[in-house]
Each structure stands twice: as C-alpha cells, then as structure tokens.
Image 1 (cartoon, rainbow, N blue to C red):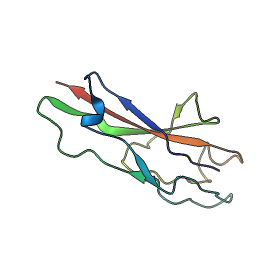
Image 2: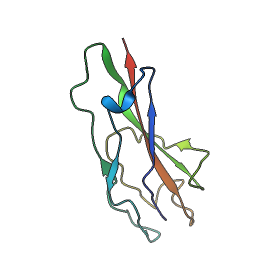
Image 3: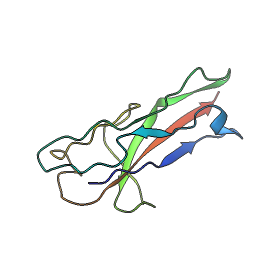
Image 4: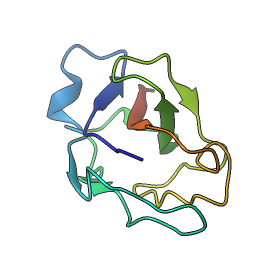
Length: 109
C-alpha cells in the first residue's frame, strides 16, 4: 500500500488556506503487509478559527482512491485529524496500491 500526501479543503469562504492548510506531514508513503496496521498519517490541525467560522462535523474526513486523482471514497469512521491504515479492514484488506486524502471542512455561520 502506498499513501501519498494529498490535500483537499472544502469551504465557502474566499481564502480557506488562511484557516487550515491541511498539509499532511508524517508517514506519507508506507508498505503494509497483510494482517498488520500501518503507521498513523498525520498533519496540521485546525487552530483557533476566525469568528463566524466553525468546523463542519469533526472537520476531517479521510478518503481513499486507487489512483492519485481519485475518484475518492470516504473511509467509514475515519473522521479524526490522524488516520492509521489497517490491512484487516476494508478496503485495505485487499492487496493493492491506495492513495489516501484528508478532507478538511469548515463552514461560515
């Protein structure tokens, strides 16, 4: 399995990067043997958001695809700032190359 740094930011404000860059930073490329877990994928987290902007849900949703350009399928329950791939759990229980992204989302109130 290969995990690559990909960013996705969903927002209705004009400059989302000023609130959250959503840069992934650790364990971006991994080879994981069947029957084991990988290392946690991590990145920056939301800091204090400007007045009038709040997280949408937890603010994060991890998704995977079989190519670096998607399409992307949300990983059920993967809604925290970090994600640890596990080859015992679908879709990673099938050998292959996977690309993982973290969507960061917030909303204007």
